[in-house]
Image (cartoon, rainbow, N blue to C red; front, side, top):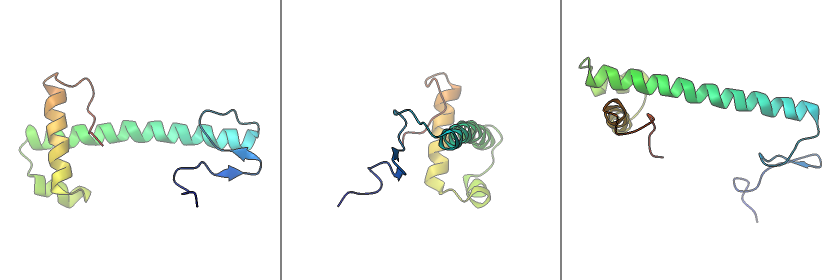
Length: 99
């Protein structure tokens, strides 16, 4: 049995996949909207990570307070702060966490 996580879903006769052209205009529009939302999510996540890193490393906000506000684990907040410090010091070109 094939896992639904590893196989793109079928929509009618089309296989939804990023590397195949879509012929259905409604499906193509939905895919474009999804990609725009994905891009916006990345931008907002970067803004949030910068705000968290700045609050903890530069303004002295406690990590536990960030945990209460965001629902993130303390370990995740610590990783964000570490990535922020590396990015701020110029040792990392982008503020990204290893996933």
